[in-house]
Image 1 (cartoon, rainbow, N blue to C red):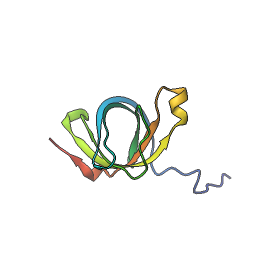
Image 2: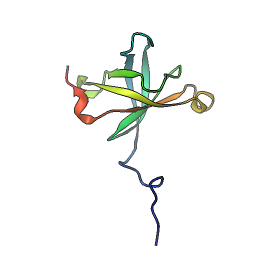
Image 3: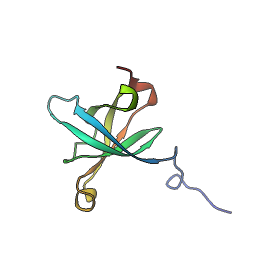
Image 4: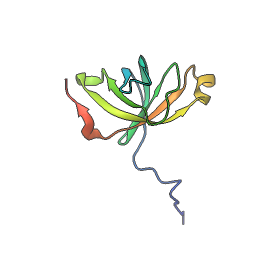
Length: 103
């Protein structure tokens, strides 16, 4: 019998994708706007590759999603190890599907 601990249980499936998007910071003290590549999505957020790390809790808007939608999110994590391996840090975001905005 397998014992599942909180560290081994995922809240939702992660799906690998390659979607070009525009990421813009909503914090005037942390200016950032760049075309990035979304690499993984889940029901709780996504991970995208960026040329630079973003501070945790930075509010952002991800635009240019399929169907012309955009979504607001917050930076949950910034993994700089990917900067060496894949050419740029991977930024994890947390967002709710209810925050999708149709243009």
